[in-house]
Structure formats: C-alpha cells, structure tokens
Length: 391
Image 1 (spheres, helix red, strand yellow):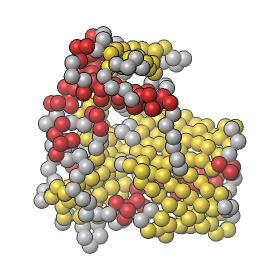
Image 2 (image 1 turned 90 degrees about the vertical axis):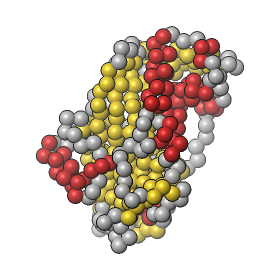
Image 3 (image 1 turned 60 degrees about the horizontal axis):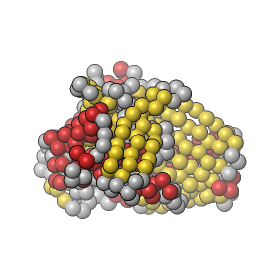
Image 4 (image 1 turned 120 degrees about the horizontal axis):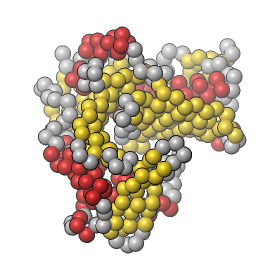
C-alpha cells in the first residue's frame, strides 16, 4: 500500500517559528470540540478542529515549534493557550522516570535487539488480521473457519481455513512500516485472485484497522479508541462496497466484569507481568478484543486551576504459549478547562516481549514517542533494548 501526503500535510510539515496560536472551542452538532488557529513566520495559516483529518498532526507541530522557538514571548496567544503549552512543557521537564515501570533485575541495555522482531509478528498481528478477514467473509454470507495453526516465517506465510467445506488458502505478507504500524497484503481473497490490503496501526489511545480490495470496490475501517475522560473504549466500524455503505457500527465496548477482571489480573501475576500494569481496581479498566487480546488501562486524575491532568497508562496485552507481549504506554493527558484542546506530555512507550521457550528471555524495545517524550526517557532509553534472562 502506498500513501501520499496531501497539500495540508505538506504545509504543516513546513511550519517553523510561530507568530500566533489560539486554542478555542468550536460548537459542533453534538458537542464542543477543541480547535486550533495558527500563523507561522511565513504567514501560513491553519484553522482546524478535532474533527478534521490533520488536527493531531497540526497540534503536534505546534507543540514541536513551541518547544524549539528561542523567544516564545514573540508568539501572540491568550493566557489559556499559553498555560496549556507551558503545562505540557513542565510535565516533560520534571519527569524523573528513567523508564516507567521500575527496575528490571539483571537487565542489560543494548542498542540492538536480541529477540528478532520477525519471530513475534505472528502472535501480535495475525490474530487481528484473521479476525477481520473472517468478518469480511461473513458480510458476504461466506462462513469462514480458520485452522488453529498458521504456516508462517518472519511475516510471510499462509492462512488456512475452510468455507462451506471448501479448503481456503490465503498467502500473506506483513511489512512493519514503523513502530506499531503494519501493512499486510493477503492473496486469494474470496477464493479468487483478488488482493486484500489491511493496515493495522497501534496508536497511543487507539487501535486502527484499514482494509481495501480495489477489484471489488471494497473499503473500510475499524477503530477502537480509549476515552480517558469517560474511562471507556469505543468501537466504530464502517465498510463500503462500490461507494455504498455496506455495514456500519458504533458502540461502547463492554468492560470486563469484576470477576473477569480479577481472573485476568491473576493470570497477569502468574505470567510475571504485574510490574508492567497498574492494576489498582479503583483506577484500572480492562476490555477484551474479539480476537482474544486485551487492553488494560488506568487513569488517575490531577486538577489544576486552568486544566485537568490525567496520568494514563495503557497496556495492550497478548498472552500465548511461547510469548507474552505487552505494548505499554505511559503519559500525562492535559485537558483545558475553558476549551476542549487536549495535549499529551511525559510520554514513554515500550514493547515488552517475554520468550517462554528454552531461552527464557525478556526484552523491552523502548520506542521514540516524539515531541512529548520525557527528557530522561528520551535521552537514556529511546531506541534501545533492555534484555535479561528470566527464571
């Protein structure tokens, strides 16, 4: 799959010093949403709200430019806007966390991984793509059941199953574009020579899947997202065929019941993963995805005069026979009280891989979280690997 930047993305990327920034509320049909008006030193102007496609990109660019600007007093802005940007800066500077889950005994920090990332692609990505391929078949009234095992080798392999007692074989290829972003090509879709394209993206508060099959005119997306303010997970799916909406759904994902959550926490403890989760019942929520993985997230509120701050930890959890995988993210979420603009700060992200075969290794891949990384995390850990043997 190839993706081209549009004109707005290119112009946002060219922004440098800021001349004016204004965060404000925009009244939409259903709610108030955050919006940003920006002028830069070359008189480029942008005015986007949270419902627009490139809002997050513009917000990140504004924060990056604000951080780098030598004299911020030259930027024209109201007090509420300046307070939010300074709060984000302060959160990043004062973080004392070298990494965000405590010490890992006898661990060695390395510049290269010891566990090959290709060897755990199957456990992280294939359950998701198998789920969506099966659901897409069901929409065409073709029941599809998978074989338990999948033939694979480092992102390439064969999906095997049956539909109406007919054997199904779908070759696939997975390409890791960047951290948390995977492009997948599946052949022999719907028993023909069609290709199905799927993109899976793990974001800070969302898991996105995009799929398309041009010969059939099929396009769609499925998005799971965490709302820190409401402490819920929402799911939104839309599929169209030939420019006609074929299926659409939007709902709140049911959280695990107390007994289910307790059983999950016991399993996390048995697997030796407790240190990677804040499992205090009063602040922790958990949901199970339809493909068998989990989101475990906690939100702790802190209040200021002009804003609400939330300390958020999110763990995407995979527990299999040979591997445990945790994609763990930790950050502060800042929400203005007078407007709906939201900022993230003090960010850290690591992919934890626990190998349970005879080698018994634990590896953490510390990701670069960009403009909002805490200073010590970015300097000491970002882009490196923590490796240790486990008992």
